[in-house]
Length: 70
Image (cartoon, rainbow, N blue to C red; front, side, top):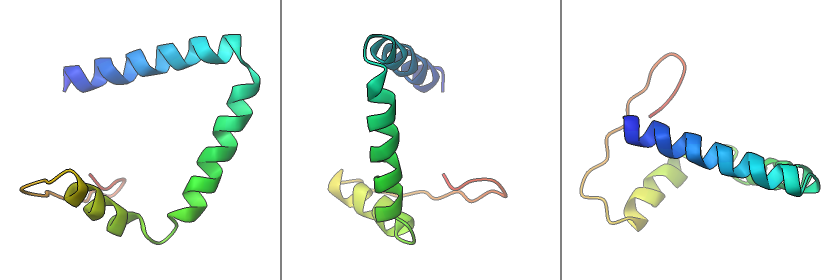
């Protein structure tokens, strides 16, 4: 899991640098995320499975906890 954690931290750090240079991009990105969230309301599980198919996954494992779906 360290590789994923490091990749997420690298992405976060690089995006923070972009936002320092282009502060108006924060609003654009937030608005895009808001629109995207509306588009997938009620369809998130279907989209998850469809993404697995698009990636030609040979197996899909879904784990449901009290707080999240993995």
